[in-house]
Length: 162
Image 1: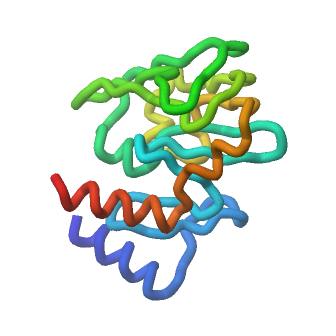
Image 2: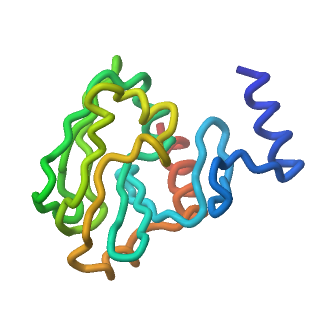
C-alpha cells in the first residue's frame, strides 16, 4: 500500500498521466482517479456529455469505497430517469447501494457487459464500466454538477468527516 501511495505521488510530481484516452487528464487523489472533463454528482456518479447523449457511471471513488462488485442492476433501454433518483443498484461484497441519475432524460443504451462482468466498474469505472447512456431532457441540469476540482474537494471533505 505504501508503494502505491509513493507511485501516485511520484506520478503527480512528475506530472505523468495515467489516462487511457488523451482527452482526459486525471486529477489524482490518494487511491482514486477523478477525470477532468466529466461532471460529478454528490452521490458519486459521473456524467460525460457528448453531443446529444450523456454517459453515466459511478466514480472511481465510489467503487473504491464499495469494494469488489459482484452484481449490477440496470434499467431497460427506453425508460426514463429523473435527476437525483435511483435507476439501478450495485452490490459488492461489503454492501448494496442505489445508483442515482445526475440528470433527467431517456435511457438510450445500457451497458449489458456489466450483467456478466460487474467488476468492470472496479477496473475501469470511466471507460468499460459505464452504466447507462441518456438523452438529456434538460441539458442545463449539467450546470448544477461539480467539475473535477470541486469533486475532489467534496470527496476529501466527506472522507475527513468519517
